[in-house]
Image (cartoon, rainbow, N blue to C red):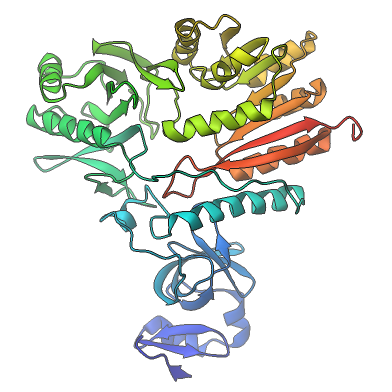
Length: 494
């Protein structure tokens, strides 16, 4: 063995293991024979690791004794020292101790709570390299699940300014002593980290949330205690229409009414002149889910408005809308290019939300049919169609997994289907229906490379082929990547 200069560890060159001097566990490790050492990596063990690629959650990934090792904040191309804290079947998780060979793409994260917060995963990597790594995530996912190597994946579509882009935030509250704290839960813990002026949130969202927190504290509104299931206010949610400047504040409560409700609304309006809507959402359940099923407008409009490329969208409190409006325009333009409409096609907009994608395509389509499980979203979609003078779009409440198979069994045949599912991907019934109907063009908008690749593998087996994949960076500084994947029916294969 030899002393590794500058580090209080012993390094065994034969095994690649570092042992802390004076560590009881390290002394016991030295007594293990080589067979025992090769079987498992013990908690606390320190290893030297070349980092090969990035994982789906932004971790650096390397391999040690044929096991996959995940190390947070390690960058592909680096060599690091990492300490094992968890071993699973075929994988190991380790904490970064030191970067022995740093990447030229490493930088100092600007956020003071970056390492604690967990909301972002890539602030320590320069932005051009973030885009390259996200494209690689897609390539690796498709290679793993489809076996395809030479895929038509375009360069990732990034932002000119990858900061201050998020138009919405929902943050939990906790009363500690006489203070009301608000922030994000630290990774793999339930410790609340106060974020302050978050660098990826729009400044007005930060300001709205902080002023609302201060008013709640001032009026001594009861804060929800999740251990006892008592108190009222659980979360604060703020959303801004970037083009209109309208701000919506949602108070998520365990109880259907808040103490001093009128005083709270009055003070919020005084402190926040840009507010257009204050909504109370009721979630009485003992659950980690944020939103409840019932909402009540306390003051102002039912919905705020946003404008994208001259289209006006109404956004009620529970409705889904993309969190990065600047990139949303680029995303939907990619969908429009992929659809290649001539004005005669029937387009199905599954998981339609407030109708954004379908209304984007409606002027170039013959007919648009959308569906969503959230009644408020469907109501907004219908209102958005009316507001924008679009008469060839219709919207229904229901699950795409049920609606499309039923209509297909009745003889319905769409020309283009657009799916924008949650991270869990498409349901099996919907995939089966898409294979049965032989849609000429299927456009899959995905926020999860793994489920996109898994679902694509089934669609490829069923007779589709991949036309083009375009990564779109909707969430700079995080490991998330959106993609527009075009699949076409392959008559020869079928």
